Length: 82
Image (cartoon, rainbow, N blue to C red; front, side):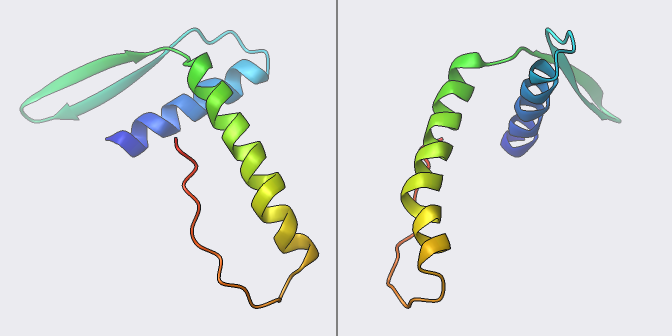
């Protein structure tokens, strides 16, 4: 469920960036025992943090890889703190 919610947040954010008027998205789960509809609104604060962490990761980790590609190093995985 968490991955689906993340994908919905991403979709709403991209739609907002493209200047479409999307104030919310309705996430629908249906099964033979019932249906749940959850309205998801854009989470601007989440995206400020997410974009900032992504930019930092790019500048501090990926840029080094672009420059030093193929150099053996013992790099540990990075947590983006999402």
